Length: 490
Image (cartoon, rainbow, N blue to C red; front, side, top):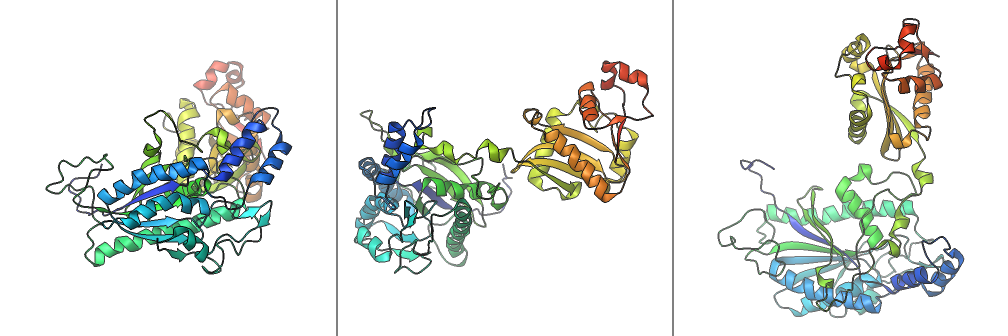
């Protein structure tokens, strides 16, 4: 927790990310999953594909269930916003299902004299893959067509690449690729931060009643129940509501949570982590400016719990296809080896290598206990130390330290689950190749601390050095307490 003496005022904007209600396409996929035994050993891919192609449309509206979800969302959202929000800024995808999802809310807000809101249709906040039917591109709706759906609700149109008079996907030449979706998510993330930062700057340059430090309790607010979404507030807060799509929201949330550096592992391949939302599921964030987000809650659906026992929660189970966002083992088993001087290792790599060493290195091999002379030399020549890592995407599965001056290889560790997939061999082969190219030393030296690690190095071409007594080799138990030196000549 921050010190109570801290003088900073932490102004923030309340943010909601909301997924659209169930679309008619969701209904199509669910029925195809049932009819053609999706996910089962006898899955009929040909039948599934044919059914989807015949029934799917490029830009569907809401299903009957989706329309009910939209009404229930408005019954929850409108009293919450009227009682607790100052100005509300809605940012909505240009796709029909998101507009139909928010329409009941916007219509009620428009009829309420106390409600203050603005509506933005963002032309690049659409779902991954764009707008197409059986690979045939469709332009999507333009501003006039969307305006006809909104009726009396006025909206601003931003992000339409060929202008609002053209459809939002008018520029498309085919279904959007995964890489293109990731690039667009980065673009929307930057736009989103700028959209919110501009509002926070208002509070610094002029009198704005609804942007303040909500962590401070003023006189008269002592009895406010923070978790009551309907209790009227004396101070109402600036609120931004983004209504979008399940997969694309996940791409944006990855950047909100982890930043740009860790949101993509492999081009054209889904990240190993994703966020799932029910139809009309709500994720609540606080935005403090300059890219600082606080995740308050995720995928909440308080409006879909029916007292009669009927449940309208859809769209967030594995049977809805979310497991297909997980990359296959084929992609995750692709390994690459990186070298970096110890003081140049990226923080997320350093964090993982330290964790691997802490978890899986034998304590007697740790540099923190009874260091050898070579280990002491390494500490004196830190600038010579290279960290070698084997990565699968952003995940480190093996690592080692190589002293560029002495050729000493230490702290070799591979995750147990990766030891039978040639990660150790990849690590050693990479070290050998690097040593041959650098020509800084003639042999690689290791000091295995267990009989198991000695056996591994023997397989990798290492031999006991002449300074190792043969008696040490005869007794396995002594490898845990006495130094055994092995060499591999280049």
